[in-house]
Length: 371
Length: 82
Image (cartoon, rainbow over all chains, first blue to last red; front, side, top):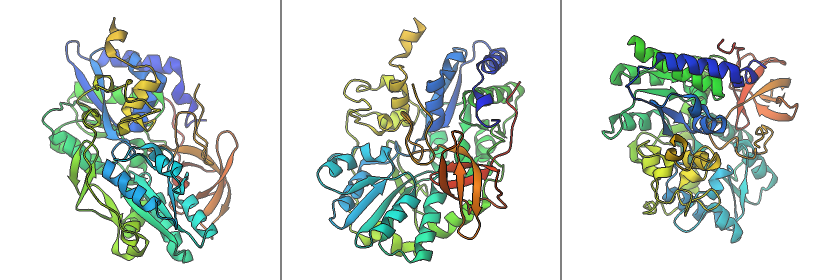
C-alpha cells in the first residue's frame, strides 16, 4: 500500500538519515518540536531519534489531547458520571486520567456507569438503545476529533435523540503553539506540524509561525520515514535560509484542509473565552464549547458541574514536559511513583504522552544511551 | 510486540485509536449516500461503518483516512522518498 508500508522501509530511512547528517552544520545545536503526541509515539516506537545526529534534538509538544486535560475537568466529568440516571461515555485513555479524587475508572469501580467508546457515534447509539437513561459523551481532542463530535450532535438533533448530551472539552492547536512561541524559556528551530489536525484545518493556520516567528513548519505523517523526511525538510529550510510551511504528508493533507469539516465545526461549536490546559494554564480562545444553537445538548448546562480549578499534584512536572522544557526522565517521579499502571500525571496516561512513550520504549535516561 | 489499532473499534496494545491524533487508512466497500454512512475495510479486511459526510464525491474503492468513526479525507497515493 502506498500509504503505510513504503514509509516504514528501513533502508530508505537510513538514506534520509544520511541526508540529515549531510545537512546539519557541525557545532550548531538544533531543537525541533514535534507538536503532535502521535509523532512522539512513533519516534520512540521506531527509534527515529537513534538515526539522528547528536546535535539534532527532538522536543515533545503539547499535542496529546488526554495530556492537556486539567484535573478539574476530570472532576466535573466524574460529578456527572456519578448521577444514577447517567451513562457516561469517553475514549479509553480518558478513563485513567487522574482527577483530584481518582479517575473515571475509579468512579466506575465505585458504581458509576462509565463506558468506553471508540467514537461519539457509539455513544449516540447507546442513547438510542437506552431511552430511559441520560447518555453523556466526554468529548476531547483537537480539530481531528472535533468534526466527529459535531457530526454526532447534528445526528442527535436530526433524529430527535433527547437523552444524549456532550461535555465538550475539545481544544484547538494554534493558541498553545503561540503560547509556546511566546514563552521565554524555550528556543526552538522548527516544528514538525500535526498531520491529522491538518487534514481538517489545512496548512494555512500555521503560516503565522514562519511569518511572525521566523521558524519553519513541516506538516508530517506518522510513519518513521515521514518523520525523518520532515526533519530533513526543516533542516534544509534552515540551511537555505527559507522559512515556510511545507507539507510532507501530501497523501493525506490537502493544503486547504477539509472545508466541510470546518463548516460543521463552525455550526456546532464556538470558542470559549478561556480554557485551562494542564501545565500550560489558561489560554485565550483555545477551547470549544457548544454553540447557542446546540446548547440543549450541552451536558454542562443540563447537569450541574463543580467547575472548580484543581492544582496539579506538586510532584508532577507534566507542565514542563508539555512545554518541552524538560525531558520526561528529568521529572522527579518519572518511572518511580508515576508509571503507566499508576499515573500521577497525564503525560504518563496516554500512549501518545511523552512520558508514556519514553517509559514504554525504555528511554529511562539519556545518559545511559550516550555512555 | 505492538499491533495495529483496529479501526472497527478495538485498541491496539499500545494505542487507542480515538484518543488522539490517530488516523487509519480504510477502503470504501459499500456506500449509502442517503444516510451518509459507508462500510469501509481496513488493511486486514476488517469492516466498520464509517460516517462519510465530510468527504465529497466518494466512491467505492476509494481509500479514506478514518478517525473516531469519521472519514476525514480521501487519500492520494504518494511515493516514499527515494
